[in-house]
Image 1 (cartoon, helix red, strand yellow):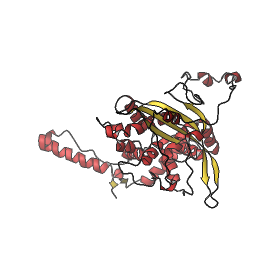
Image 2 (cartoon, rainbow, N blue to C red):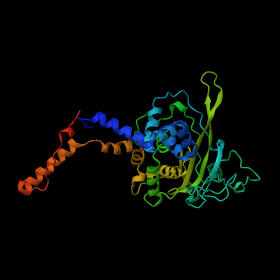
Image 3 (cartoon, rainbow, N blue to C red):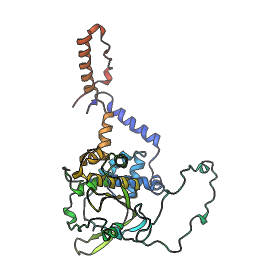
Image 4 (cartoon, rainbow, N blue to C red):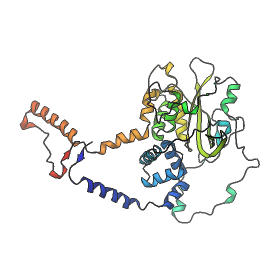
Length: 373
């Protein structure tokens, strides 16, 4: 990193002050409005920040002016200061308080399809009437409660499929929670443990996961996914008391999970990809579960593509590292650039002669001199 020698501190303070002026005051009311009116943005920041704290995520969004990468960074920075006091008991899909649950693989699934809160089936039209200041009165008849309310929990579609021998059987993982590899504290080695892969996808950048997942769907991968089951719901956060050993609920958190299936090479059963994250983020989960399945096809690697390589996917969808590396290019690189420019001048002078050199030096004011610590 290169640091300007003159005027740096005051310039930085002025830049930050101007930013605050342009973005307005940071108030508790603003934070509450963000949390209430932009829940999916809050969920994205919580998921990528790997910390379930809606109020803090809304604060991070407000504090950064809606720059989601910066919001994720400061939320993770705060997370790193907090102690881990307990491990929650694993949550099963059939135990979730489910509000949305759909499958593209089957029309009829055990328990039925539950559309839940979604705009998937609505027209994408701007509500210009709101800008006119005369929004139509809400018609309460638009929402009609069902005669038979949806059930709070539903069986997993995958369990039903295993009963039909469409999916391979799996054994329950009995690894103690404290012994599960943790991508936030362990160095990632490749091939990565499955826990690291799923954790990395859970807190990966939504846009990066979407881009790579989309590349698989377009043929730059080894599978063509079908959404087996997509769920949005609330997970009961059950914790075992460290002294009494009694299990109690510490509250509920919004989560989303997705399974995709694809024909398995040379097998009579389908292969499954899975992903889950904090908050409700459907498009990320569909793409992430696609990547999980595609990366799991390493033994059938006929033609490697970026989305097929575990190391490529996990490194390049990490939002804090990727955005940080990209943003660092805004910092001064005068010395390294000047060094390269000097080399070009030497080549031009050697080949064409000094009189025909087209690259000339640019005068640098004294105030812009720098030091390299």
